[in-house]
Length: 469
Image (cartoon, rainbow, N blue to C red):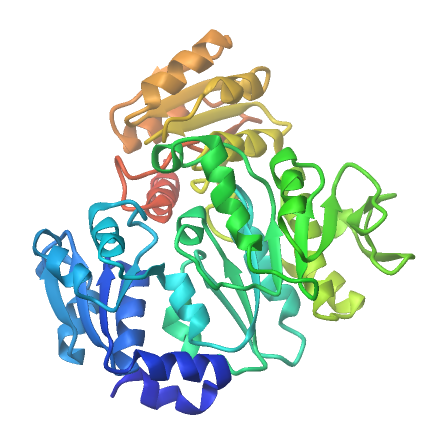
């Protein structure tokens, strides 16, 4: 049974009109990871003629991608797909496919509109959207915002870059629902009409320069989250972050600031050990900072942003306080694994860039044994070395850019060991760590040189740590 028939009563107005317009259209979906599969199923469920395209042969793709032909979706290898995208009525690309890659470029050259899966999913539904982006912290903030909203009566979907494609559930979200979406720069490359009622930008620091080229282009892509907002909308911006602060002039929405470091005339901030909000001229206490269960100053900022988003929906402060105190974080973000012989082991595999790892280092007062390295994405590792100075007693480096990280750390006076395998790195960290120290996996790099993704890397780390004798 096609998806549309399962949920046809849930889609109204804008979403229904868009799905009706897809019927009979020729849609090419490029990239068949989770987002691409969701896009193909949604378009096929709406009655479109769908061709699915990937660089891998069909038999090497995941089971859900291999099942697409049974729904009437044609599969075409990437090498044979140029004609398909040029003759399509619409091309939908997955986040992992750059907007300027050969097939999207060929489609645009033929006048074919190119959008991403996020845009597609948003067009197919009617619910209000809270969209959260930033270089670091967006998954934790998205998950926390969803948890804070759980007590209110409106149905809530947490989706997007957090691991649940919006297109996979768009048809099931009722018009009065709320969508909390983590949004990456890759997804923002391909939006057109995407219009979040609340758009939060947590921070903008160098990342993904191997794809975006320059910090300026990366920041410009992040700013796209604000492009379609109007005066009735809300932009939640970090007053403590230069990159996020600079975006205030880019939105027509009401700007609600958040700050860990300063008192604000309009926003959510820390005062006297409390998270407080000043949105209507008076200060309202929300929750004591001591009730935040997440480690690190950066997580206080994430809480401030989530509180601002929740307040926009009219959530009661007592419900927000309860949610903040109960939230324990998400896997792979400074996640405690175990303690062995007086040494604590933490998994921060989501530390995929220098700024994220710097924040992880700053979350600890104990001496650290740092495991870092992977695919460096063109980053400068000198800021990592400065943050590690006086905090990291030993560093174990791995992967494609491990040597570059090792050189930067060695110049900061840190003892560095280079390992050929991940298992060797964990064993080496165990051997050099002393009681009272912390072994921290926070790679400051992407995982794709050695692993499928950061989740895979973190899961392997946890398994290896649990196996330590």
